[in-house]
Length: 137
Image 1 (cartoon, rainbow, N blue to C red):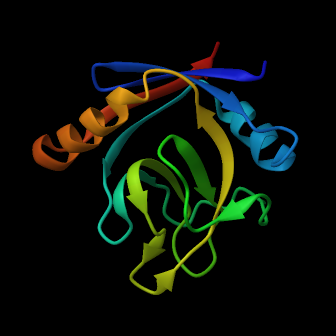
Image 2 (tube, rainbow, N blue to C red; image 1 turned 30 degrees about the horizontal axis):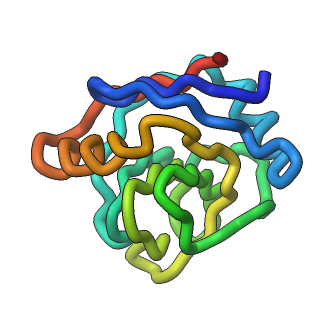
């Protein structure tokens, strides 16, 4: 399985797991699926939503990490300076927290319906948390 179906609010996306670039992060995320949560809008990073995971220790380090993901390049921050989280960018992002700039593991890339990323982000900003489901394609 190298593709994931993401259902977020009323939108559906297909995404590719970045196994060649982030194999440990992809393997860990596969073990969590189907993964159901709620996304909220970020506070410091720009145009993105996120799933806060608190002090969850996934046993991951950094791989294929970036602070500047493009829309649809989903990151998993393994924790350390800030809490563990999943970042779901829909526009311009400089990944950060209250302690400053962060870098997260780019492990998942949205392949279709990119035009709905911004709609989802703005819906989350103005109407609050949205349900999200990641499941094997």
